[in-house]
Length: 336
Image (cartoon, rainbow, N blue to C red; front, side):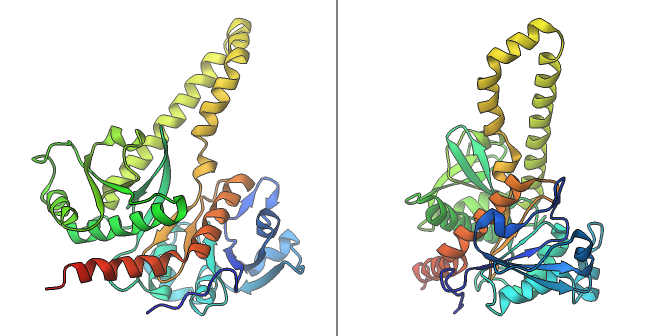
């Protein structure tokens, strides 16, 4: 069974600071969290004049994984990259979690190699909370696996359910399967098979959810293949950008629309806050024997702080251990 130290005993967070730069310079995670934290950083960090203090330890790494690098090459040749060093420290228990803004493919490949998957989970997934009309919904997989089997989808459902229960305090969270229709006859064979398997588990399976249902908030967790999930996520982000573009255009035309804009601005502010990508920054690489949070590189202090908050909550709740326990219960339920 897995040993993951409680965050209270071991409250160090690790940051792979490759790409963790905002307009005002490097994000200082200790300032954001008020916790003890460590950086692993490429040696070029000296240029940014970051100093050790009692709350911040810098561990230098001699290599860095660039954004365009292939995951396989990064894994093979970058044994002393800031990413690899950070993940090694999580593996040996020196740190409770790793937050990285690095290359997603390389992070997933390296994390899978270093930390290994939880027994019973064949593939890790990328999961994030997406805003809905009723709060938020966890959606997975958002792009780690482009060919997920029905069994993988069930494993994703278990992981999403544990997250919704422990992070959000949802009792018996509802699980929806993303599909092209809500009727049982719709969808491909994998999705239909996953639905059959899910009905057979103790999970609170709701049924099929269509693309537009992602944002209605009818379910606590939406499960899908990584190819589909990534397309849905990117399409949604595109729509949000388009709406913001039109709002800026229409409120910038003349003095009257500017006045109208001022009147509407509290409403717009609420709308903007609800759709603020920073509030949802921090995707979880779930299914590993350790906590790894992927942040957008292009975010700011607020976005990074959110990714860090997710890491802290998941470490305190010991998410990997609970996923492992839940899987054991599922398997026992199906013992002959």
